[in-house]
Length: 233
Image 1 (spheres, rainbow, N blue to C red):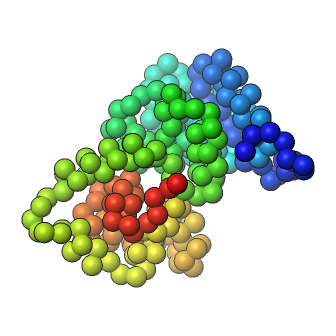
Image 2: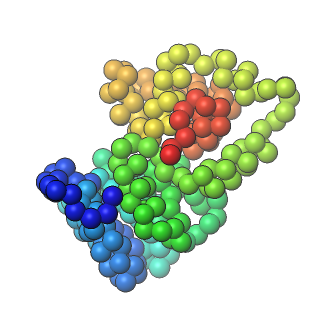
């Protein structure tokens, strides 16, 4: 919601955001847009990777809005580097690149959302709010493309191969999948289900094998497609 409420939240109640983009004019514009939302606070901005890493470590933001081309080179490895600097931060990739394989790899490396730069500002704000609340943000067109790709790559050796795979899941594995669909990391899943992170990893290995998916993104798409998890609004 744009504008001021009767009482602004305190800084500790706001979603803290670090802007990382090599275009200063874009950072300036995004900073001004986010300032109009009283539930969001920009805690820093960076135009190159080393500055982004230092600021992430210093400010520990809730959300990192990241353009991968910080140093003039497309660097997907910036994602795990930033997560190492600030493990509790959630990264949203802000990009002008439509390449699906790159989006897939970004999610696999730990990004929690992808927004195309052509989107309106209100979409960026909504993505920040959703990812902060624990969801994965991939717009419906991207999700549809991922699902189409997965469907084409799925063998048709049975009338309903997905149903046969799903039938193999235990109740606990279904719970893990639901939390993965909400964007939970392994540590959060462990805490929510009162199990160890090692047990979470064992569950994921079993889930990947039973559902014939290779990584977290494919699992999320499979879960959305088969209603094992709720698709983000």
